[in-house]
Image (cartoon, rainbow, N blue to C red; front, side, top):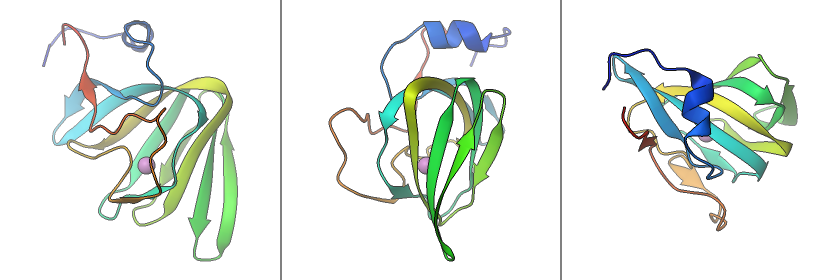
Length: 132
Ligand code: NI
């Protein structure tokens, strides 16, 4: 892992693939990942970890199936949100967004349980960025 500073904008400009997180750096046992998203992800659940979202650009919605029922939160640029472990969720961005994620290294983006994965979703625990 490089010890040089990294700009999120540069990291995001290094790839185009949607729903395919890139690892920018690591903190202890956690990855800092960035992803470009548009359209709908897949309903999924992380059984053992919370998942942190920061919207770098655009707007993200996250549909949540909680014990009290289903709701959708809207995250404008600059907003942060944590999906608690065990909560089924589905990120959505109608017009596209760039997001930062913070979660334990090895966490698979589609979680431990998920619906059928559509073709536009890259099943991954994050790809390294070139040169990092
Ligand atoms: Ni998730």
